[in-house]
Length: 296
Image (cartoon, rainbow, N blue to C red; front, side):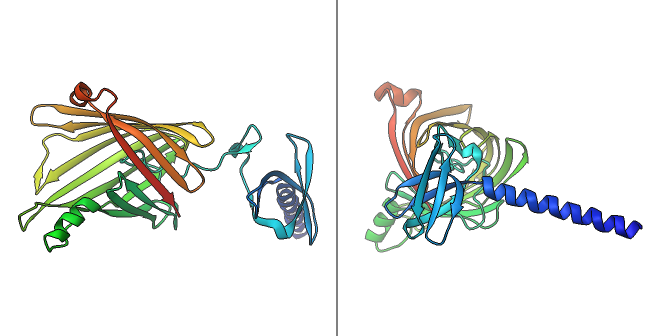
């Protein structure tokens, strides 16, 4: 009798699970992109070998879409829909203007970043919690090549990042750089070990970072501190700020920045200004800063 009860219990659980799965599939919200780049949003009401019928509950419309015209069809989370529009994921949430957040690239994700047409870097997610990046600077490349030697500024940036609670991520990383001393045979070595914490989600967040650096093996006597933030104000627009406290012999030198980020699903462009008290004396709004990222 006990075995019989166990059999019916397992059977009932199976039916409940199957019903929940089917119900989820039926109510899943799809974002459909056609070959002509037209987009549709809704649940699939019916599907045949030639057509799907998409129902948009917000507008009450039904659209018959030829299957051979569909370029992409994907399920999207309900929270990604705002005012009957699909807000795709922020493509550059792992970084502010230059410094990182504690969010990490997912395994297999990556991006190319160009800063002021000079700094060129790549970052790739090795796991969901660990990424490796590095880059090269163009101006030093051309100068050293003109001197008959390939010795550009290069840098290496491994990082870890993971979630410890809702809206709380922590991480850390290393910045290693080699900087040529023009006219000399030796390079200057720069190293930094840092930890950081991010509060918020991919669209609205703030990050505090503390780092210990050294130049040619001589350590700074105080840590470098940064506070950065980002807030998404529209589907394709965010405000970004990144602010540094750079240690000096006696105190700290502040540098602050403010800008706008424009982005699509796989590209982001930052237009910003870098400023401090000294810069503001000559250029009130600060020094222009331009940076773009292509995600792959």
